[in-house]
Length: 262
Picture 1 (cartoon, helix red, strand yellow):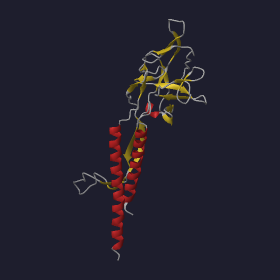
Picture 2 (cartoon, rainbow, N blue to C red):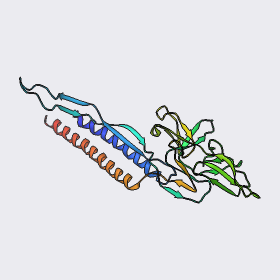
Picture 3 (cartoon, one colour):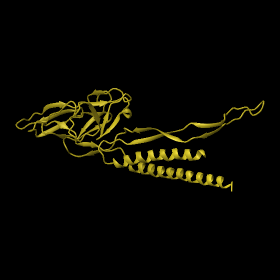
């Protein structure tokens, strides 16, 4: 069977991965704190019929070889942790990280997850939680009668209670950084889990040791750029169509070869 059939099939599978990745990026264009992904590929092994440097005579050697590629394979789908645009909301509990870092959240099973989504709420106990009810670590509890909540760029949380003129500190938001954020495991719900590839989490005060500062009343939008994604989608579709055309052409050539017997 012609090798082109298998080679084109790998191309179609690769472009399907590209289109699936692009579709997920576009679907999350309005997801707060979402980080887009990029599909990466590598060529497969080569069928070598003649190596470069092979002797062609007693005094000459071939300057090039004869190597036929066998297709393509996906090597990685990499999260791109470039910073998204900030959107002002005016909500006192909305926080955006400007620069590097993640918010640390506690899951129901006690494990920790990390997120760039700073759209926090308050549960029935006054604890700051995300949309799924997972508390921020370390926990911040807002008094029920607080009239104003202020969050500094360094994560200091202060409130003003009725009858008082001075603000009272109720907590300190810490952020976490990783040496290789792209190595984090995406578990959905804007949350990431630590892996061996991400490195150990390094916690600290926002604004120190390379960690980004906080902006109260803002959220970080998705870093997806629709123009780029639509261009990638068109490129992927055209490449998919071209590979399918190769399969059709190879099939027609095989039919022609088979008909030579008749």
